[in-house]
Length: 572
Ligand code: PPS
Image (cartoon, rainbow, N blue to C red; front, side, top):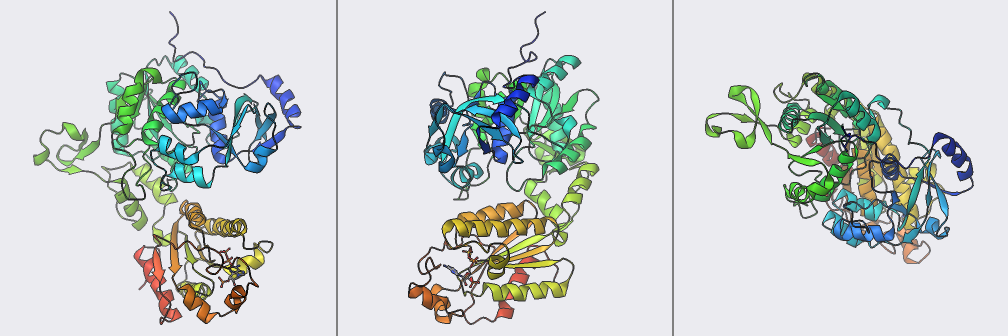
């Protein structure tokens, strides 16, 4: 009997162990690129065959085909641009045909790449075509414009070694390792479940049903590379998944961790996920409502229709090589004490249908409220509560922004003292002037330097927040994209409260407490915010404070009320 094609080994890009040792030494002489976390994820899946048929980062011709019609230059289906973005300065140093070394963030050489292509992509076009809109509310579009380098390099990759992971090593498998595992267990039909969230009872029910329907074994295949900013961290999630694994009938189900960097590209992402699962030896793939959805666009609407992903998947299913099992929306029927697919409940008017949305769950966790047994497993809830204590016990960051002399520092100081009077959590003030003395003494006021300054403040604030403290920041922070980046850094660990101190430039200049506006007007200080340098007025700040005719105590009190309203402190 011939072996099923989903179980035979697929090509990898690694060279043999001996060649790798040699190549590692030789690669010491090459120009090298320290990869970003997202590029490391992409490289791992390129090298281990997870992105088969790709043999490296996309060439310009492949990129154009993928962007335009989801196809490589040779016609094969591939929906996602896997590109190596670099800075102008790095790209300029290279000759076409040159080999470069690709390193991880500690400088370990993971691979070499022959640079066959170098081009400046039209990022707006990529955003429109791949993500459906050139709208920075989409996390991947934001990444494209504000994190990714300006130039793309393409070319074949030679794999030297896998990126190192110290966590959950036994749970990470390459496509060939999973194929070998399925072979060993005699699993011929395997349905994969993709997830970036903790699993609750509804997920357990639906995955188990999907497996029964497809007459397949089940692979829980969570993404642990990069998911949507703000998601539950993967350490917590994996501990939750391990608890849920015990709930499936013995030997029907397994779990493996996928070091994928998601793009949240909805329909295209679903097709991509299917191809990746086919490479991992799966025959079936569960696609749900709003698969890999990025949330709302800047007009407050969904980027994609709820079933666009299923439609695009279905249209490409034969080429993907992994059959779709569509996701049933499972709800709990109280009278029968069980989960049922929402669309199969005939007596809907006579029974009580219960459901807790993701938003409601987050609210209950944040406020320390009850999470019922019918909704999740006690072990899962315990894990979630352990990493997400109620908001009143978590760290958070208050980030003031406004013109020089707007009153940021004064209000920040008053707020700090009030918070210290309340006690409970350590408070650190990262005031603009203090930071420039201690963290950023070498920096000036160019856009680049201001961004560096704010990113440093954001980094420190996120560390403080992670460790349960309160960080109060009070820089000008004139650029909206930089403020957003800091927000994302902090929100990985706790709340970010942006306070716009909205004193007008005229009022700041009239006050001119430090005499700087006069100097700026005389041209003695260049690039002065509001006079000769831009300030993006914040939109969507948690709080906006007017300072004219309001005393400092009152302004600080407004912040305290906001913090109380957000559940971050208790005022009694
Ligand atoms: S930024 O843009 O956020 O990095 O600025 P920040 O670190 O908050 O520093 C602002 C303080 O530096 C003084 N200063 C200037 N501000 C703006 N533009 C120019 N060119 C400039 N040169 C010096 C000014 O006193 C700011 O103090 P604050 O506390 O905002 O009044």
